[in-house]
Amino acid sequence: MSILSDSGATEPGHAQTDLTVGAFTERGPWDLGTLDNTFPWQHGIDDLRTRVRSQVPELTRRRLVPPGRRVVAIASQFGWALARWKLQRGERSVSESRTDLSQRLVTASEHLGSTYIKLGQIISSGDGIFPTELVTEFRKCRDQVPAESFAQVREVVESDFGRSLEEIFVEFDREPLAAASIAQVHRAVLRGDGNPEVVVKVQRPDVARNVHADLAASAWLAPFLVGRIPVAALANPPALVEVFAQSIVEELDFRLEAQNMLDVARSFRQLEQTGYVVPRPHPRLVSERVLVMERLDGFQFDDIERLEREQIDPEEIVRTGMIGFLEGALVNGIFHGDLHGGNLFIRDDGRTALLDYGIVGRLTEPKRIAFLRILMSATSNDVHGQVEAIRDLGALPLDVDIDEVIRDLGLDGGGVDPTSLSQTELVDEVNRLVKAMLGYGARMPRELMLFAKNLVFLDGAISTLTPDLDLFAEISHIAMWFARRHGNQLAADMGIKVDAFEVDLTGVKAQFGVDPATDSFSYRELSERRELIARRFAGHDKPDEGQ
Image 1 (cartoon, helix red, strand yellow):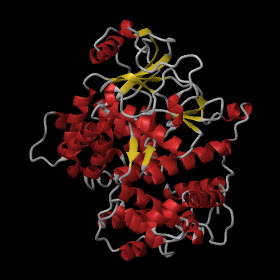
Image 2 (image 1 turned 30 degrees about the vertical axis):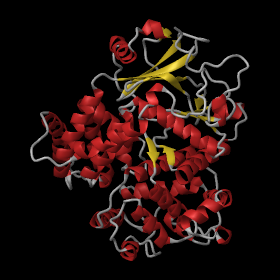
Image 3 (image 1 turned 135 degrees about the vertical axis):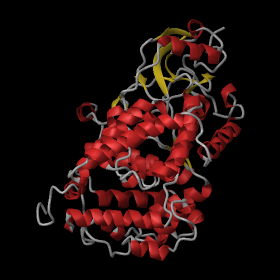
Image 4 (image 1 turned 60 degrees about the horizontal axis):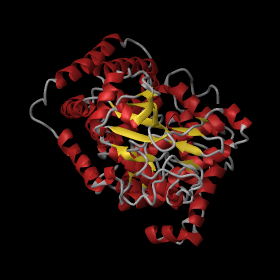
């Protein structure tokens, strides 16, 4: 029997029903209908997501005794890395010392395998969240994961689908298109109506068991690392393990990823975000370890010459990215959680193809409203409202004194311009802020980390595509766009009078460290400020130089 004959294959001249409910290509290899939970792999999908998430507390709980021999291997690798770093750090600058430590942590992660390579890949796309040196070094291991043998790939596919590879596919490339820590992807051609070209994502054998063992071992070790890793972003290793566990356990079941694809596609369509395309998962060929999906084509988003040839406006790409991401999160409470250059590309029609839905942010209603309040408070100079919303996201304890936090962190206008500080003063100020945040019991909730990480990627996209973009004008445009388009919902959710809403970028300007009277500020100017601060922090510049 044909794989596609009873699973929604499109016929010539047939209108795609799924285009009315999802952001897909105009004509796909199959029709997903109304996305109404009718596919075999969707049965009990919500209960499955709940069961998977419920594993996290057990995997990360404090244990009295080490959970298996894996603890010894992890402790040995990272302990040896830290010991050698301490023995050889000498009189190096802060930046040089961090680079050396980061290199040793990367080496240890690569020796430990899939779980730690995946953690490294998350860190590698976390500019602004993790230290620059750590991000730079972990980028070197992003694409250096050896592929599984074709025999192992065949075994996983045939075991999950109960048929031989040849019964399902006319062609199946032995060499993968890409190999990551959790899975690898292969080009293939389905056997059936039209013989469509597809991409097959295949999970590495035993990776789920290994990840669970690594999480349990890491959770046991993490408390011993508090205060011992001199990297500010990792000052709370137990919290980092918990956040990481929340993300990776869902990635281990490709049925959840396929559902993420449908939910994000539905969100884009509801919001009339026509600038995005989501690949269709196959109606039947999805299992815990194998995901067959539509293959999309295009080119890298940062290919400036290609954009010019295709007469695609880079500013439209940036604006599509900003508004599409923010609107999905703030209005529908769902967003792609792992934006980076390998997960998206530009199609010839100018639409952005968005790939890899293993990590997706899903906001509860209180958290969605908290994110809304952050955006609206930031653009109306309501500092108190911003900090309250951050607290409501779970980044601060519910009983924290908001006014005290504002004073201690200099958010009331009492902060200092970092470009005016010497290296010693800058390091002391960073340490003071980190100590203050930890003193308040601050943590990085998963949703906030994913949201911030995506903003960092979009920040980099602006740097590449539109470095002369006026940031103040763009922020004002997005804030007013939200107020006009979603005014009724904002009024209902936040109890504000949208007609009376006015953009006030005083607080935003303070965060950028510029004069409140400044009318425009390009990304190029922001980059120059950041470079100056980085040089100052590394001790390569002085306050009276380069200003």
